[in-house]
Figure 1 (tube, helix red, strand yellow):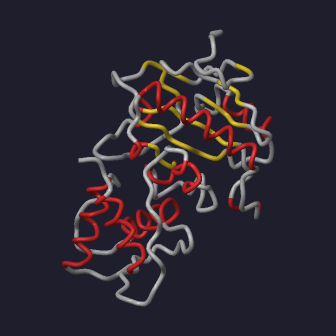
Figure 2: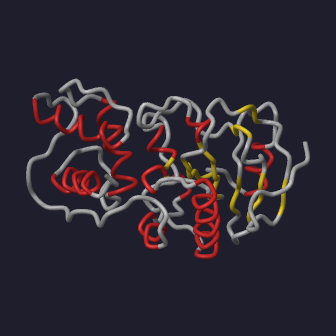
Length: 250
């Protein structure tokens, strides 16, 4: 179906057939992805291919152009199997933005400045129109930590936060201290799991630092403590998490 762009920042619309009815009444989350493909055109073709069963509301090109593929009132298929704060249908509750970037394996560890400026402008518009809380501007890796790593630890979340987009604190410095990693169990692991779940990560409190906990910690680090992404909960990771929880709106 043809549609009118939802944002003044859109330069082009293309019709993706990959969408459906929203199952939730209100959009209250914004999910950022990277395309992880060799080119923008390859990504656009896949997001508009009915056989792929994937889409997003917006694609932001390397030079900053914005293409809209799905109208905002429709449920785009970008989040997949995911969860955040007890929400198991992020597609229905969110708007998805795909940022053209070849991905981790390409070795490219930055986003072009013009592209990030467009990300900021579009996010500001979407967040304002839908009144999306700062703590609900999320990475794909936040909502699917076992299978996704985008938009990556090199995505400038701090730059977005300086513009009022997303929830962020200055990461606690990396320093010596207690470290929790896979195989450890006990009350301190249980406390860590409870804090991560309280923030929104889909993690069961079990007191065992297993693969799921490691993946969630790694996702947390990609977003909030990007200097070292190793899945080990050191003091820097834990103190950054505590600071984020303390900074949540009451």
